[in-house]
Image (cartoon, rainbow, N blue to C red; front, side):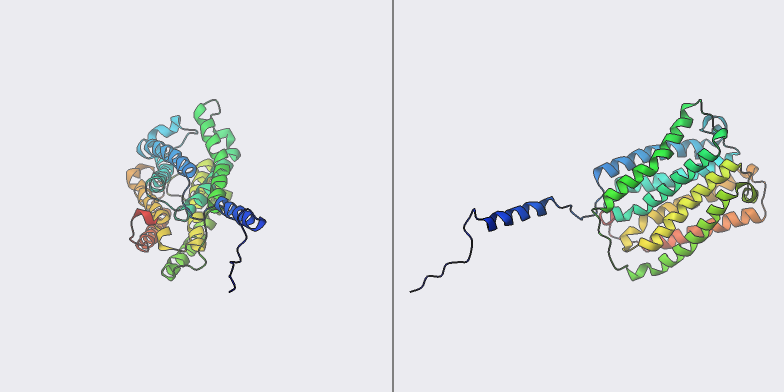
Length: 302
């Protein structure tokens, strides 16, 4: 009677050792879970602190920005405009720190911060004669925005290396992506033009803008445009919508209040003011539409 012997190499053979080596190597491969890493969350927490401090100072106490900021900002409406950006940043960073779990829910904000930092450091270098370089706060401003692009790129590349991008987009996002492409393209074109010609286009703003302030405004507008354009390109799941569009909504609401809070600074109340308010209302409508596309699955879905 024949005895069947399993065709399995004995323990310790080269085949078994090879399988063990492959299993050990597989354990060392990166997990493509797309989760926000602790170092990324810690960095965003630092940005949250900076956003809170700047929002309180510039939006809440704009009169002090004339003499107590990195450069003299006046009128108060200009300081409040920048402060509105930091207020929106408080919303964005707080959502990342306390609610978000997945990198794809927040990466549009990384693109936005990268764009803002490049614009502001460029404006700083172009208008360096305007800054008070003997003050620590001026150097703090410069160091933050000079180093931020490198930090964002380093953290972003690390996160993307462990994040898989879905091939197909949820069809429920098609309308939002198309609207974001149009709005982001128009806003981005205006931001580039304002940065390149701050004197000419700055004269059509509802309140007076210095060349430096006009380029700072252009940088904030470019930030929003970049977030919209990235969303138009990369949105795949409804859970990725909430943070960028809630941030956009907070920014619009804060800016819509500026002419009312600082009515004495508004020197051009005709067409410039109507265009300012109209553009913000359109963006606010886009933000509201975006938030309604979000899947109602709780913070763990973000």
